[in-house]
Image (cartoon, rainbow, N blue to C red; front, side):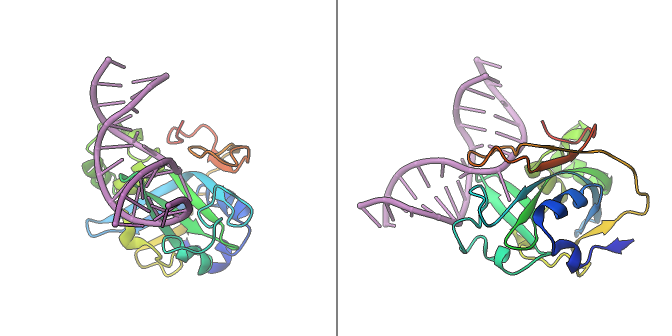
Length: 189
DNA sequence: TGCTCGATTGTCT
DNA sequence: GACAATCGAGCAC
Protein backbone atom coordinates (compact mmCIF):
# COMPACT_ATOMS: atom_id res chain seq x y z
CA UNK A 1 0.00 0.00 0.00
CA UNK A 2 1.70 3.14 -1.13
CA UNK A 3 0.97 6.56 0.23
CA UNK A 4 0.73 9.06 -2.60
CA UNK A 5 3.91 11.19 -2.50
CA UNK A 6 4.33 14.91 -3.07
CA UNK A 7 5.06 14.58 -6.81
CA UNK A 8 1.63 13.00 -7.34
CA UNK A 9 0.00 16.26 -6.23
CA UNK A 10 2.55 18.47 -7.93
CA UNK A 11 0.85 18.28 -11.31
CA UNK A 12 -1.97 20.04 -13.08
CA UNK A 13 -5.13 20.04 -10.99
CA UNK A 14 -7.17 18.43 -13.80
CA UNK A 15 -4.74 15.49 -13.97
CA UNK A 16 -4.61 15.04 -10.20
CA UNK A 17 -8.40 15.20 -9.95
CA UNK A 18 -8.92 12.37 -12.42
CA UNK A 19 -6.16 10.21 -10.97
CA UNK A 20 -7.54 10.57 -7.45
CA UNK A 21 -10.60 8.60 -8.52
CA UNK A 22 -10.38 5.03 -7.21
CA UNK A 23 -7.70 5.94 -4.64
CA UNK A 24 -8.26 5.27 -0.95
CA UNK A 25 -8.68 8.14 1.50
CA UNK A 26 -7.74 7.19 5.07
CA UNK A 27 -8.22 9.12 8.29
CA UNK A 28 -6.80 7.69 11.51
CA UNK A 29 -9.36 9.10 13.94
CA UNK A 30 -9.54 8.62 17.70
CA UNK A 31 -12.41 6.18 17.26
CA UNK A 32 -10.57 4.09 14.70
CA UNK A 33 -9.38 3.79 11.16
CA UNK A 34 -11.66 5.26 8.52
CA UNK A 35 -11.12 4.50 4.86
CA UNK A 36 -13.11 5.30 1.76
CA UNK A 37 -12.64 4.93 -1.99
CA UNK A 38 -12.76 8.25 -3.80
CA UNK A 39 -15.53 8.11 -6.40
CA UNK A 40 -16.32 11.75 -7.17
CA UNK A 41 -14.19 14.91 -7.29
CA UNK A 42 -14.21 18.45 -8.66
CA UNK A 43 -11.26 20.50 -9.82
CA UNK A 44 -10.81 24.19 -9.04
CA UNK A 45 -8.01 26.09 -10.70
CA UNK A 46 -6.56 28.84 -8.57
CA UNK A 47 -5.64 31.10 -11.45
CA UNK A 48 -8.25 32.16 -13.96
CA UNK A 49 -11.09 30.27 -12.30
CA UNK A 50 -13.63 32.67 -10.71
CA UNK A 51 -15.17 29.76 -8.79
CA UNK A 52 -11.93 29.12 -6.91
CA UNK A 53 -11.40 30.45 -3.41
CA UNK A 54 -7.88 31.46 -4.44
CA UNK A 55 -9.14 33.62 -7.29
CA UNK A 56 -9.14 36.83 -5.27
CA UNK A 57 -5.74 36.26 -3.72
CA UNK A 58 -4.46 35.09 -0.37
CA UNK A 59 -6.72 35.41 2.65
CA UNK A 60 -6.74 33.94 6.15
CA UNK A 61 -9.04 31.14 4.98
CA UNK A 62 -7.21 29.94 1.92
CA UNK A 63 -3.60 30.56 3.00
CA UNK A 64 -2.81 26.84 2.68
CA UNK A 65 -3.48 27.02 -1.07
CA UNK A 66 -0.34 29.10 -1.44
CA UNK A 67 1.84 26.72 0.53
CA UNK A 68 2.18 24.03 -2.13
CA UNK A 69 0.82 20.65 -3.26
CA UNK A 70 -0.29 17.77 -1.05
CA UNK A 71 -2.03 19.56 1.85
CA UNK A 72 -5.57 19.35 3.18
CA UNK A 73 -7.71 22.43 2.56
CA UNK A 74 -10.82 22.28 4.73
CA UNK A 75 -13.39 25.03 5.00
CA UNK A 76 -16.70 25.59 6.75
CA UNK A 77 -19.65 26.30 4.48
CA UNK A 78 -23.26 27.42 5.07
CA UNK A 79 -22.54 27.43 8.81
CA UNK A 80 -23.27 23.74 8.75
CA UNK A 81 -20.83 21.69 6.75
CA UNK A 82 -17.14 21.13 6.15
CA UNK A 83 -15.67 20.40 2.74
CA UNK A 84 -12.43 18.49 2.18
CA UNK A 85 -10.03 19.57 -0.55
CA UNK A 86 -6.54 18.57 -1.64
CA UNK A 87 -4.06 21.18 -2.84
CA UNK A 88 -2.10 20.79 -6.08
CA UNK A 89 0.09 23.21 -7.99
CA UNK A 90 -0.61 26.82 -8.87
CA UNK A 91 -3.21 27.21 -6.10
CA UNK A 92 -5.42 24.56 -7.67
CA UNK A 93 -7.52 22.34 -5.43
CA UNK A 94 -9.45 19.10 -5.82
CA UNK A 95 -12.73 18.93 -3.91
CA UNK A 96 -13.53 15.44 -2.65
CA UNK A 97 -17.28 15.21 -3.29
CA UNK A 98 -18.00 11.55 -2.54
CA UNK A 99 -16.35 8.36 -1.28
CA UNK A 100 -17.37 4.74 -0.93
CA UNK A 101 -16.91 3.49 2.68
CA UNK A 102 -14.42 0.65 3.16
CA UNK A 103 -13.14 0.71 6.76
CA UNK A 104 -14.88 2.09 9.86
CA UNK A 105 -18.37 1.85 8.42
CA UNK A 106 -19.95 1.36 11.84
CA UNK A 107 -18.23 4.51 13.10
CA UNK A 108 -19.56 6.45 10.13
CA UNK A 109 -23.05 5.07 10.58
CA UNK A 110 -23.01 6.08 14.24
CA UNK A 111 -21.90 9.61 13.44
CA UNK A 112 -24.42 10.11 10.68
CA UNK A 113 -27.29 8.33 12.42
CA UNK A 114 -28.83 7.18 9.15
CA UNK A 115 -30.15 3.89 7.86
CA UNK A 116 -29.28 4.20 4.21
CA UNK A 117 -25.77 3.04 3.42
CA UNK A 118 -25.29 5.32 0.44
CA UNK A 119 -26.38 8.35 2.48
CA UNK A 120 -23.21 8.06 4.55
CA UNK A 121 -20.80 9.61 2.12
CA UNK A 122 -22.52 10.59 -1.14
CA UNK A 123 -21.85 14.32 -0.79
CA UNK A 124 -19.04 16.68 0.29
CA UNK A 125 -20.70 17.66 3.57
CA UNK A 126 -21.78 14.11 4.32
CA UNK A 127 -18.40 12.46 3.93
CA UNK A 128 -16.64 14.95 6.21
CA UNK A 129 -19.29 14.43 8.87
CA UNK A 130 -19.11 10.64 8.54
CA UNK A 131 -15.34 10.68 8.92
CA UNK A 132 -15.30 13.34 11.61
CA UNK A 133 -13.19 15.70 9.55
CA UNK A 134 -13.16 19.25 10.90
CA UNK A 135 -11.07 22.39 10.61
CA UNK A 136 -8.63 20.81 13.06
CA UNK A 137 -7.25 18.98 10.06
CA UNK A 138 -6.82 22.20 8.10
CA UNK A 139 -3.39 22.30 6.51
CA UNK A 140 -2.43 18.71 7.35
CA UNK A 141 0.33 17.32 5.15
CA UNK A 142 -1.20 14.41 3.23
CA UNK A 143 2.15 12.83 2.36
CA UNK A 144 3.36 11.99 5.88
CA UNK A 145 0.91 9.13 6.50
CA UNK A 146 0.16 10.22 10.05
CA UNK A 147 -3.47 11.31 10.34
CA UNK A 148 -4.89 11.88 6.93
CA UNK A 149 -3.47 10.40 3.74
CA UNK A 150 -4.35 8.89 0.38
CA UNK A 151 -3.12 5.51 -0.82
CA UNK A 152 -2.96 3.60 -4.07
CA UNK A 153 -5.11 0.45 -3.58
CA UNK A 154 -3.71 -2.98 -4.40
CA UNK A 155 -6.84 -4.19 -6.06
CA UNK A 156 -6.90 -1.96 -9.08
CA UNK A 157 -10.49 -2.14 -10.12
CA UNK A 158 -11.22 -0.93 -13.62
CA UNK A 159 -13.72 1.87 -14.11
CA UNK A 160 -14.77 4.52 -16.56
CA UNK A 161 -14.30 8.20 -15.72
CA UNK A 162 -17.11 10.57 -16.58
CA UNK A 163 -16.69 14.34 -16.68
CA UNK A 164 -19.46 16.88 -16.28
CA UNK A 165 -20.17 20.42 -15.15
CA UNK A 166 -19.46 21.42 -11.58
CA UNK A 167 -22.21 21.56 -8.99
CA UNK A 168 -23.36 24.16 -6.49
CA UNK A 169 -21.61 27.23 -7.86
CA UNK A 170 -22.81 30.28 -9.74
CA UNK A 171 -19.77 31.26 -11.77
CA UNK A 172 -17.75 29.44 -14.42
CA UNK A 173 -20.33 26.66 -14.36
CA UNK A 174 -19.58 25.76 -17.96
CA UNK A 175 -16.26 24.13 -17.09
CA UNK A 176 -16.54 20.30 -17.21
CA UNK A 177 -14.26 19.84 -14.21
CA UNK A 178 -16.34 17.41 -12.19
CA UNK A 179 -15.15 13.82 -12.51
CA UNK A 180 -16.73 10.65 -11.17
CA UNK A 181 -16.66 6.89 -11.54
CA UNK A 182 -19.30 5.75 -13.97
CA UNK A 183 -22.16 3.82 -12.40
CA UNK A 184 -21.02 4.19 -8.79
CA UNK A 185 -24.00 4.50 -6.42
CA UNK A 186 -22.19 6.96 -4.13
CA UNK A 187 -21.93 9.66 -6.77
CA UNK A 188 -24.16 12.61 -5.82
CA UNK A 189 -26.94 13.79 -8.06
C1' DT B 1 -18.53 47.50 12.81
C1' DG B 2 -22.32 45.66 10.09
C1' DC B 3 -24.31 42.97 6.42
C1' DT B 4 -24.62 39.50 2.78
C1' DC B 5 -24.33 35.00 1.10
C1' DG B 6 -21.89 30.55 0.17
C1' DA B 7 -17.96 24.41 -3.68
C1' DT B 8 -24.77 21.78 1.27
C1' DT B 9 -28.13 19.06 3.42
C1' DG B 10 -32.40 17.70 5.61
C1' DT B 11 -37.10 18.57 6.30
C1' DC B 12 -41.49 20.18 5.22
C1' DT B 13 -45.21 21.01 1.68
C1' DG C 1 -39.78 21.62 -5.20
C1' DA C 2 -38.92 25.26 -1.78
C1' DC C 3 -36.53 26.79 2.11
C1' DA C 4 -34.41 27.04 6.75
C1' DA C 5 -30.23 26.13 9.42
C1' DT C 6 -26.17 28.79 11.09
C1' DC C 7 -21.05 30.49 10.97
C1' DG C 8 -17.63 33.34 9.32
C1' DA C 9 -15.10 35.23 5.22
C1' DG C 10 -15.13 39.11 2.50
C1' DC C 11 -16.44 43.47 1.36
C1' DA C 12 -18.83 47.99 2.05
C1' DC C 13 -19.12 51.91 4.75
